Length: 73
Image (cartoon, rainbow, N blue to C red; front, side):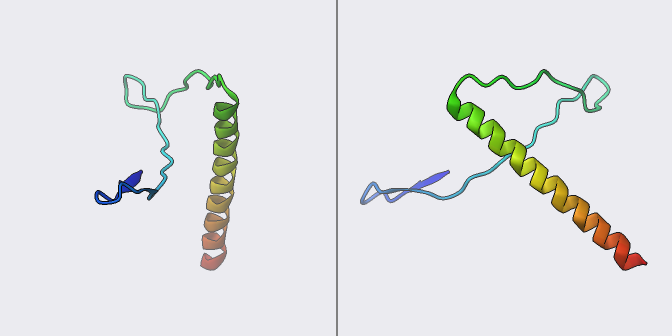
């Protein structure tokens, strides 16, 4: 997202968001979709970066759950 100073017309980057979307079937359950096809170097770079973010997020989630179990004894 961006913001713009209306007096100076200066545009600034304000935020970036990453969304996770899930395909669902007729029963409302998650379902598989075809693999992503990248068509440019930029798309391929973004795909690799997304996979890296996913791995980090899942590893962090695993660590949090493990720590919770350890705290429970």
